[in-house]
Image 1 (tube, rainbow, N blue to C red):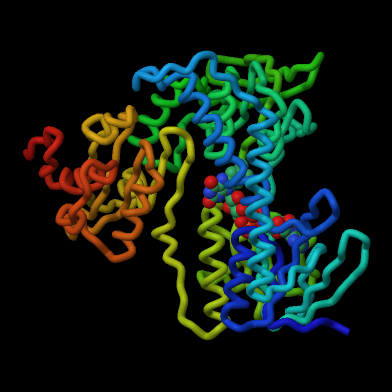
Image 2 (cartoon, rainbow, N blue to C red):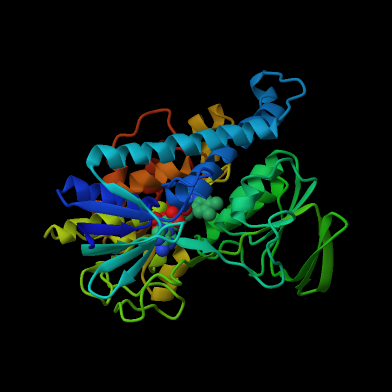
Length: 478
Ligand SMILES: Cc1cc2nc3c(=O)[nH]c(=O)nc-3n(C[C@H](O)[C@H](O)[C@H](O)COP(=O)(O)OP(=O)(O)OC[C@H]3O[C@@H](n4cnc5c(N)ncnc54)[C@H](O)[C@@H]3O)c2cc1C
């Protein structure tokens, strides 16, 4: 006989586990099905984000940043650190401990809220039923009032560079390298490539990034991307644009990579090669052919703005549906869906989802870029404030980058904010709140910001929109 639940969630990443906890909080009998096993064949919660994504990458970014700072940047403060050393196994052990703490924390939250964690691979059947097959092959049937699919995404593999998990690795492999490669190749200079390339560059690798596109970070505001590219190159990341990898073979303990660019064919030899060319929806084998769930042409589950699939009472959230592949986007979709199941009128404002690249300095953004507004024919104004003019950035020896605010030329309403600089993620978050409240640049300009903080750069950028910044020379009005 089938076990009955009000809500069955498939996948326990940030989209799934948040949805499951919220559902239980709203009084629904909830189960969360997860196929990931730990090394003792017990269910491992947390998905990509906690196990091989956001959290481990940030743990390594923070460790490597502290090491690089001790080695390269403390002398300016009058601090001398002689012969700074990095112990890679200790760094990886710290990362693993954080993963265990957080994934164990989700198990605790499930228990506390009464969510049943079910170990196995879930498959959606017609009529909002879920078939679960555990790692021993035992099949269990769940009858669900509502199904939320949150099965996430997987790294994209490319035929010229097949992953062997030793020399040619994906983002997961790049989080577990046991020693610092002397020469590291990275295919893809996007978010994940830049973060992982930065980790190993800081620890001493010579890093070459091969990016097929001619433009660096095309999804980022063009002025910010240009500034970021200059900063990263100064840090020693060798970013080669328009470089299409055609072959990667392992030979005598190194990876021989061939790539073509505008000036012909090139080859390079690396100790390790990271393939970081994006992620794809994990939607194969997830539902029976008569389930009613459909996919779009790229394999994402087709959903409307409310994350409803074409099958009644079946929803999909997170990386497996359209939109940015970001943990917080998936979590908020999960909350929205559960609230709608509970009869509330919840909606997600897709125009206000911040995104961050956790390099140093960070790159963060919300809303429209200048190039998008130009393409849409929208009249806009910008206000820019460089951190080189911020007392706090100078005090912290972190003067690289800028805050850029983009506003509607007529209404002054904020349309976007783009930051490259220290704590960019936290600064953009302030503008996300402002945008959610429909603020204008003038609203921000009239707000009091503490001195001395990096936040003042947001204030000054808002003032700069109308040429009223205090701590820089304003553009002359024509
Ligand atoms: C290196 C790296 C760094 C990242 N850094 C960030 C960051 O800093 N910030 C950010 O916002 N995002 C980051 N991301 C992206 C982020 O990890 C994803 O957007 C997020 O994990 C998506 O959440 P999800 O719940 O949709 O899917 P996932 O986290 O992928 O979880 C899906 C879960 O479903 C399970 N599953 C799949 N199929 C089934 C099935 N049939 N039955 C049962 N279980 C199943 C999987 O085992 C998995 O546990 C990063 C990603 C990577 C790879």
